[in-house]
Length: 326
Image 1 (cartoon, rainbow, N blue to C red):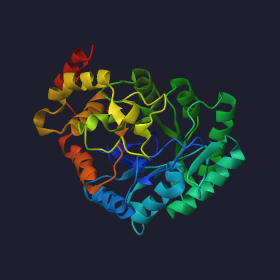
Image 2 (tube, helix red, strand yellow):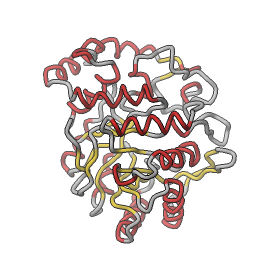
Image 3 (tube, rainbow, N blue to C red):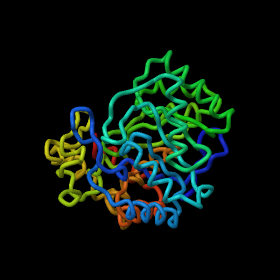
């Protein structure tokens, strides 16, 4: 599978990235509701990152708020001595308390962006962030313009190589794209819920499409009873309003299970697993996509990374999926 170049930059990444939300472990909102994916083993996370690298993955996406700093620290440990072999993306905008592992608010000021960047550099053990991303998807445009210019300052100072916005609003993504060193947009997309407007924007503006939720928060792994998503500490056990895939207790919602069943045979053709087929759909959907599935184990890392060797679905398979989901 060929690599991807992010925007008009010289930053090249593997066509598959790894999302590091899950390896942050347990954390919560101010009301005590879980925002993580349950308990994790840091040594297993580190081993999974290194195994992914062995299999050709060079792009790792995290955020300062994941595990309230834990994800960044674990990623930094895993990459110690190998920093120049990978591209690191992280995000800012959320405010949190590391001691209580609690999300406490948001801050869209330029001053906070700089403080957050300094803290991320320290936790990751690096002197630069390759792709720095605004993590708040609905920031007003005037404030976002100031933050875009702040990112340009960070680039000039050598602290950041490029930047992007994590948002599902094409208009907001387009505003960031006006910046010289904006290389992409991080947005939701998967075989169950397409994002045609955002993919069209990426094509028109020459942006990378960094795809979160490529496996629908684990629903597209096909492992219905073995993920522990009903356990305490897992966001899927008490799903917030935006998490459409699951009902209380982490039970997959019936309407989404039905859609998966409709396309299962196509996605698992050519000896792919369901997860690998879902990733292959994204690569076939647009050559600008860089899906970033999550992981918590070496086995998950191997399954996702091996999808690189199988490449995208064929045009015929892509068309068949579209027909089945009409």
